[in-house]
Length: 211
Image (cartoon, rainbow, N blue to C red; front, side, top):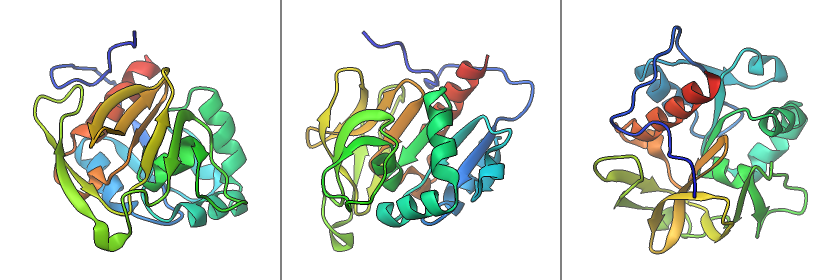
């Protein structure tokens, strides 16, 4: 039995100050995440170097090219710092490539590609096809009172999922939104729509964890 997911549509969490959420900005679709978080009342900032992690309540890892992001995480010095923070319970929301970076196993990654092993899933990069195979679908997500319109672009395919992982949404019998402890992942790009409810769920989870 999993704990109830914080941030359901009728849940409220009071904060004395806006949450400070970083968005990994080494490569990929980070600007739209900053806009969504700001619209929801968080103080959002771009993260490119280890000092940028100081004072944050949580982090979003956006979509992009996961092998490039892995290299840049190492060359920037962010990887090891983030690895330690995640192990200590630092909340992270990973979307598309962010899901790959947080997965325990990446089936078709480069030999030198690193992942944080923060959520017990196995993923295949571009598992739904290449850019030309992009698609959209309405998903039923636990905690939301109406479907979420999801945009899949070169999305990772979850091929295995541990029992410790809470499945929040599926598409074609595959996990596309999941949570384990302080980590939430989505296989698609929630920042590419005007629907901020998944980001709001993440903010609620961060707020509950900070109390």
